Image (cartoon, rainbow over all chains, first blue to last red; front, side, top):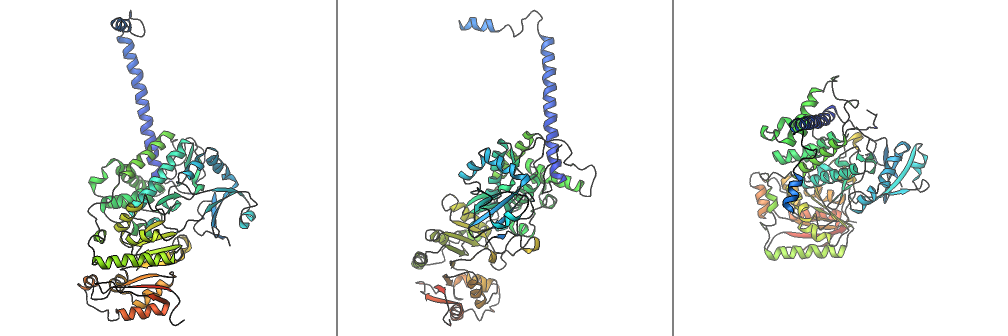
Length: 66
Length: 468
């Protein structure tokens, strides 16, 4: 980290709270990222291999609309 | 005559000189770019226009006062108008500290949007002009640096949030504590007096309990303590922290149980209607005739006569020792009267000069004088409630007042009798004649009508004495 021009003491407690929050936010982002990858993996394995990418629902829906 | 502000020395990046009608702030060469960024982003102009930041004008170095030109390393000098009356956080009621806190956080939110940040967060950077809180320290802005924490977080908690939480949760007014501790309320101390059920509230837990725990854990030079070389803080975390603090402060309310009896003083009218009408008319006429620049309303309660004075005076400093009454006055006038400054002060023990070398924060007597004072229904509280002899009260008035109206309430009055109910009457010298004699020694009495259907007397006085 860079050196910051300081004239007040941010205190270890003040830095600690912000680092903890950064850790929590970082952790949540990581979990969300991993969950997204896991979910996409699950979707890929459960999809019918003959089904075209993008799903097969759209043409049916457009027929109903028509 | 330009003098150095003895309260401006902590931040080596900038400092303040006081002129007769202006305040000058210098920035050292290394920090000029921070001010330039504040100007270039348009933030300074928009904050000044909205009344959130004090008017600021950059000067050519040739226009700057002499001491600055002689200081090596001065990169820029800016000029501000002088604040009509300097006040401090320990003289503000709950509502004013809350307004100053919200104003500071709003400015910080806008600054972050422009890639700037406030490097500190203290109520001593805020002054009220009337009821409007104004950031006066433009040296607080600096360019945001990626990964840097918000350095002012703990300072904000100690000087804004913790005093407000103290009063909101326990009902104990924060002013006494803040006056003794200019750095604010330590989370360790606040944590030790808060009830458990409040500590479990999300915001209290994060900003008080967790900080207190971390503070204790790292108190003795612990090598594992977080440092500036630690984890980088994403900007989103700081934005989220500031947003959460603003929501938390906005939701804080004065504790309802701690209601003051003085809030109902006007409703429980102690005057016959005829006497009150006469008093209102007399005070209004005295002010209209004097047209004073500065009025001090001593013992203003919820501001009946401060509001009258505001119609005739340039600026009104409305002072009372009852914190709740001053808070009610602020709430009553905050959207209408920008020339009334409500303050909490106990005249028996007014704010002293204090801080470094006892000159960092100035005492009441060093912050100006009044062209006109209103001292209505106050003398008996000082004399009987505080045992101050009448001649000392008048002598004290003469140290800051040029003229005014003072009310004498005799011993026979029910309000004085109430003060004497639980104590021995040792106030043989408390008579109208003695008061009048003391007043004549220091001032010229212009008129002294008795209020109809009352034994109370109003004195209109001006500079000069009978003996002069």
